[in-house]
Image (cartoon, rainbow, N blue to C red):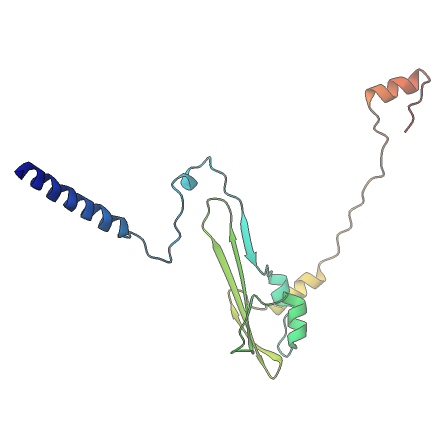
Amino acid sequence: MRKLLILSVILSVALGIATTAGCARDKKDDEYRSSVLSDLPFVYKMTVQQGNLITEEMVDQLQFGMTKSQVRYLLGTPLLADMFHTNRWDYTYTIERGHEPMVIKRLTVYFQDDALSRIDGAMQPNPERALAAQDEPEVVIKVPDWRDNRGLINRTLTTIGLEPQD
């Protein structure tokens, strides 16, 4: 009887420890939890892009005083247009290439009286860079005409006088 009591106490303590250990967290809620296998070098992870891709050339074309429709034409529809802050548009672009860490680029444009008044973020307009881009000559690539690259069988048939029909 005494052995049964000791065994039941040990089992209940072990069960209690196991259930409370299952609730323990070693990471914060906002941290990404990945699979153990995803860190192996031979496991393929595809590139994930999200948001509005905004280049320096696009930002260089921004000018203070532009209307909302002009900014939307240049940068696209904002990812976040807050109904409580209608004069603020947020553009966010994230890219995660394979096993590399995620890159986040943010751009926020502010309007005053429906005109662009301020730009915040990683990229700022650079008028000199925009002028340099306009001065670059347009590159024209001449593509050669199509050459008749027939296969061995077609050339042999043509040589003996039997033309293949297309």
